[in-house]
Image (cartoon, rainbow, N blue to C red):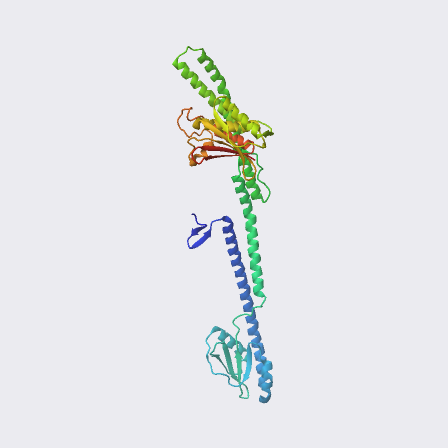
Length: 440
């Protein structure tokens, strides 16, 4: 059993083109979207950081100047008012800490020193603990200690609605990717379906040439190829018909000359050979006519009378052909084509089994099914399809009594297609072959 994915080095790669294009577009667009989001986030972070540091420098300078000019007794009333979200002022020496050598600490220390204007000696320390805290210690003009407790914000605050917006954007991204892939792959699906349904013997609808220029060009190329194939097959059949038709005149002359010759074993052999050649030519003409169609019109036939007349024609010549089961109902088809199909089936059954049985029934969709059955050797299952090809003979010798021309079933298949039916060969349980034609 083949795996549904193809293996690439270090990667499980989908096998279908639809999945591959979808995966490539989705990963590429998601990566580009994530990169854009990261760039915007970093830009916002850096802008907010610059604003925070700038505000810290300006506000701290003003706040320290105000506290330095106030009497010591009045400073406590303004400490909370001067504090901000990421820093606050404390009157006192603060907490004992350790020197901070981090880049963020040095950056904040530089801003505070610039704010103080080097008027007051300042010392920056990091306070150990789960929360990243810095304290700047300085002494005011009157000798009072002042501590600035700074809590740097390492992560930008995210709005509560932002994850929902991100999810909606990703859903739109997946939807647009799926729609683009579907739009791009659909013409390939139509082309594959048209190729699977390609049958030069049937006048099916041409592939639609609408759509983008590349799709229209591919559709036009496919339709042109279809017409060329049908033209080549028609030429082949015309050549076969022409050769078969032209051979009849010299064969007739040879037959007349052979009849005028004196009786001898050689004459009998020559007449027999000429008869075989004439049958081959007649089968070739019949095959060519079945490929082109005879222009016969559909007519309503009574199945019971139709099948009985075929069986009686064979019985009158001493052939073992009988109708089994009850035959009733009617069909709307080409009577002469159907008669030729059933006659070819019966001829094969008589040749290989010596007798034939005809039965009429209906399938699950109430289509008429006519079967010709025998108890001969049958055909190997792996050769049932090949048996309907032109000039195929299961018996590979050149003996016409056993091998035949190989055109009987091919003609039946051509005519079945012309009347809009379907043909099936299968081996019967207990031995023998059944040839079945279904009238649509």
